Image (tube, rainbow, N blue to C red):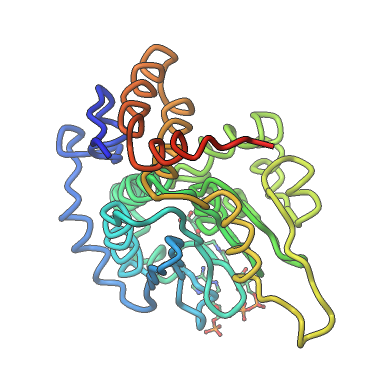
Length: 296
Ligand SMILES: CC[C@H](C(=O)O)C(=O)SCCNC(=O)CCNC(=O)[C@H](O)C(C)(C)COP(=O)(O)OP(=O)(O)OC[C@H]1O[C@@H](n2cnc3c(N)ncnc32)[C@H](O)[C@@H]1OP(=O)(O)O
């Protein structure tokens, strides 16, 4: 497979929004964030090409400590470099998703300068998560609140367990989303629904989530415990519908959609041509041509 050389550095070279040209120092804010320890972000890369990223801080309902924000950035870098990867599932540990920023860290960093730096750091990381050349799914069990709700919007898809809730609680905190969640929410559900969800701090359950297009599916509850699949198993089988096939082809699928989503039409068309060139005449293409396959 040829590599994709495109005129769209924003998507494929550095997915970040802020850098030193914006007066932003990633290293300076990392040092501040590391002063707030606790929890971890765990990455499991599987032979299937589907990775599982777990937000792990159960004593605080998987709230993000500063150290976890830094950890997430490192795990996203590992996923960017995963040649054999095709998909990623983002979940919370212990059957709940994520309750946003750790309020203890928020209280200690309550001046506006630090708040904005933290928000730039998280915008960079979550933008890179959304721009991964992998198909991503947020598996929402329990609560996704505040920054946790924003994290769900940094995935391509959201699957909700019955009883789970996505809630942008920001208004109740005297805030608005700052991790890019508002911009992504508008793209997902339209500006009128976004205004309702943010203005009313609405509790979105799985039914409402599907109705407004925030959720892409609801996980089944099987009362027969012996037969029941876990939420993660269900999410893996849902995602595998879209990740069957060789990694370079799946990555190319994600990249053409991403460029269509983020670039102007002319730039998206040029980028699509480059990505097409990277799979044209590649092993999967030659094999398909040789097998005279019919698409019945
Ligand atoms: C809004 C902007 C900002 C951002 O975008 O950066 C944020 O995200 S701020 C955080 C927004 N989230 C919240 O305000 C969540 C507050 N917590 C809750 O509403 C509840 O704890 C809930 C619904 C998550 C769970 O309720 P439940 O009754 O099931 O459990 P507890 O309340 O007893 O919680 C257990 C334990 O977890 C601690 N906890 C929960 N969330 C956080 C958090 N965000 N930061 C720090 N700690 C959190 C809670 O205090 C309990 O600890 P304990 O020591 O047992 O009292």
